[in-house]
Image (spheres, helix red, strand yellow):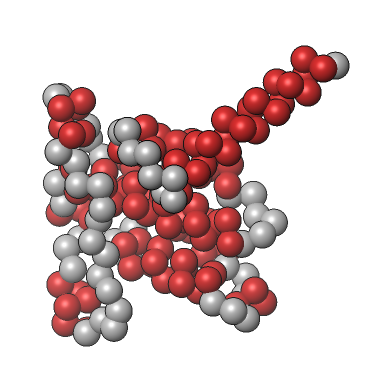
Length: 155
């Protein structure tokens, strides 16, 4: 789990590259999701939850390549971060894993990520950025539910 902050951006980069379709990155994505689930057990929401969300840093700063060996190891460990930072880290990791799963056609991991990306969208609040992955996901889920209801009503 300590390598999760480094692994998820790498997974996204690998999936985004041309020619990596021959690699089986599904197992790597599944391991990242297992680590994400472990991170979820460490997140404790503060007692003043709604007010604390307003101060939540939405964007988590991941280390940018090229990494120097000294600075890469000095990056703060997941366990040493504050609750707000962990929640922000979790949300950004969910977005990157969602993006990775969308680029990998034919995998069944999306079902695990849909509730998480929708939860992250609700925690971020009233952002109306239509280019945001979580907002796009919310819109698609609503659209699919509407179509499903229409089909059942038509029967």
